[in-house]
Length: 346
Image 1: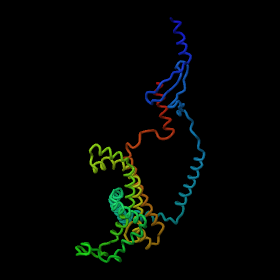
Image 2: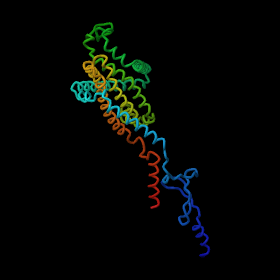
Image 3: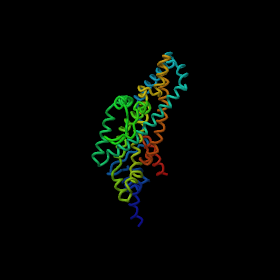
Image 4: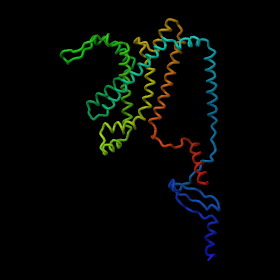
């Protein structure tokens, strides 16, 4: 009886192949017995799996060349900024914290916030109108977007500022009937209001397309499933559609905020004392054009950098759960495979 069992034992010690299925991944594996050596693992479809845990790092000599070139150019730029006396850094340091500059920064920030608020509110209304089944609402909203996206912001600012040429008085009442309220256009349309109207109405057209694209990115099956559960349209939009659309709306909206901050410099043509207009008023008296423009650039860069950091945190908040916590990149995946193989052998 012992002799009958010896061939089977010899088969095990000679390296008989065994086939099985990995319980964690569901892939079929084939290999030899532990006493004779290791076999080759196969994945789905019988294709061999490639173990990248011990792969050699690929060399990229062109990256080193590009890095050296960039470092040389950066060194030349720093040398130019430090050694060229025409930049007049002492003048820059004297005006960068000036009280007059601070007032211009406050006007710029106020205008950015109000114009973006107007743009977002209009964008939501226009996006809903463009997605409406009502052809009149859809056509009117599309016409608005077409007009304000097709004309330059500077032209719109000048038109609003000079509205009194078209309408000396602005009145509200019954069409072809009595007027209830009448106001002088020059007294009503101040430079600040003209700037808010010009920037805000233009921004509404762009935000409408951003919001519409974000809403359309959500699978319609989400709304259908919510309706099947008895949720109202408003609750479905607030709890289901909008949270998923926000991760597509936030990145371009953050870019629009930064663009709006820089677009406020256009209001200098209508004599609104923003940052750029304040800088211009100073160098028109002192003739120190370049140092004062550097002051404006420094403050624009500081504010946009802060906005960029805030945008990154908001994007990270709304992106939670959108992607799996998977390793990104070749070497991260190789490290994961190495840890998995160590756990299996131990």
